Length: 167
Image 1 (cartoon, one colour):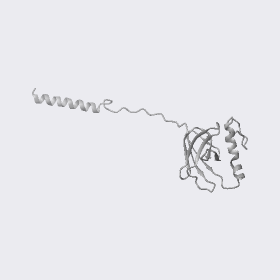
Image 2 (image 1 turned 90 degrees about the horizontal axis):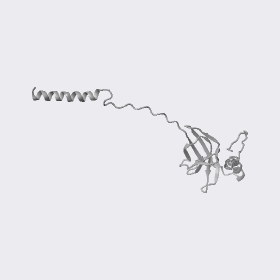
Image 3 (image 1 turned 135 degrees about the vertical axis):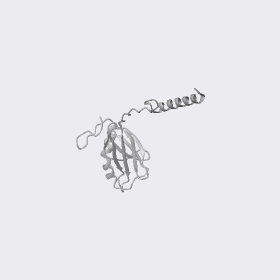
Image 4 (image 1 turned 180 degrees about the horizontal axis):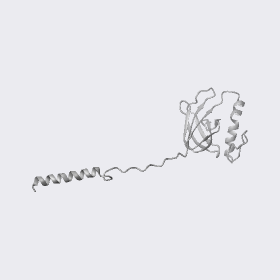
């Protein structure tokens, strides 16, 4: 056999091996990925707006998310220039949002709302308008009393007769 014939056979064998590696099942093919399990969210999102009493947004408002079952502040944030705020990863439960002064006093309390896993709750809090102090006091007194009582372990009962705070 001539030298040229041997080179042709070697080249052919090498080319055949390369083709075999490329087309043989499983040899060079990428492995299929096993499907990733779906991630079930365990928390929810709270979005809202802080308002001044005159229906204008309240920019840079200090906002606290309060868990009414435990009475504890769950998170706090500052609203944007349009008064909007957002709390990511809120545990499922019952909450209110509080509008705070610079020294941490509660100026207003929003309505009671619930957060569910994977859900989004929308709420708002409004600073009472410039009215006699008595009107502002009684406007948020019940919600503030419920929030304060829950921090002491007192069960507050709303007008529906069901508990509004944890024991």
